[in-house]
Amino acid sequence: TAVRLLREAGAIIIGKAHTHEFALGVTTPQSRNPWDTSRDPGGSSGGSAISVSTGMSFLSVGTDTRASIRVPASLCGTLGYKPTYGLVSTDGIVTLSWSMDHTGLMGRTSEDVAIMMNIIQGVDSKDSGTLDLPDDDYTDYLFKDVSGLRVGLAVEALEGADPETLRTFNACVETFRSLGVEVVETKLPSADDFRLANNLGLIISRVEAAAYQRAFPDAGPLYIKQVFEQLDEASKVTGVDYITAQRFRAEFQERMLAELEGFDAFIMPTTLVPAVKAEDTEQYLTILSRNCIPWSMIGFPTLSVPAGLTSGGLPVGAQLVAAPFDDGIILALASALESATEDLRPYRGP
Image 1 (tube, rainbow, N blue to C red):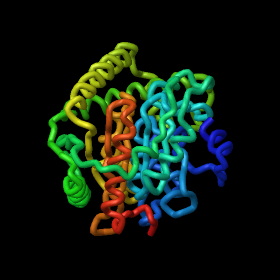
Image 2 (tube, rainbow, N blue to C red):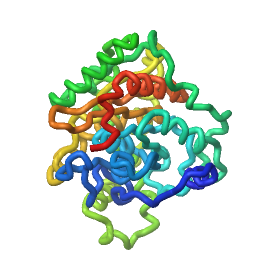
Image 3 (cartoon, rainbow, N blue to C red):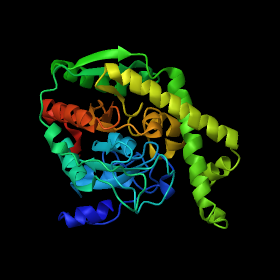
Image 4 (cartoon, helix red, strand yellow):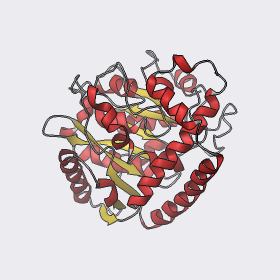
């Protein structure tokens, strides 16, 4: 549906981008990061990020079930936006997790993705998860004065961050403060929240993926090793485990909604490390997605915006999170950051 709407609006579709098999990973095998071709671009929508980062396309469509838009956006220096669950149809996307799958957007700037969002938003009879809401004009949120907005700095999201990532992210936070944004430390989500949301979010997404893949009982030998192992592990999860994960999900969502009553948005590093060497990705799978999975699990809008470069010239992303349907707030913040740091924008490409 998203591709059809883009074509109807006059967009030129140049091709399909490479992704991880079934979007079931935070890497993109056989692809390399354009900032350093010895490194991985992140995933699963790594091809989408590469396309935008190298200038092959202005925009790209991807998917985000756990972290698959925001991780490659952060590692490749593009803007990656996962809208509120239900705002964009997932029709045409091979199901991974029916309750966590999102259609995601990548672009060079917040203006790019706002224009794209205007086109692909809306209820779709082919996706029962879409919401019948009035269309919004997301470009209305751009180039606004963001002074006075209150943003919660999730301190537990900094735990374990690479020093270069932390330095670049902290500079981004100071830029927001210079724009008049009130950035206040918050202890929520807690360390336990991040741990449980990651562990239980994996249970939900893997079990739902395994349920879908049961339609192909003889396909086992055809899966790549990483996908086969996840599906095999999911087949051993009990119904009690799945229900426990869903109960935490509802409770976590309720607490985060309550916390965001005191903030306009949260901010944290998108990933704890910059792009890693391609041969080392197995060591970083959970580290790359740690700060992203909680928000996919509860369907909150999130956006990874380029925060700057490490001293080694690798992009770092800052993740902005808002309450459902407050997508405009994170677009406004991203737009303000871009205007204030134009000379540092990594998405212009290597």
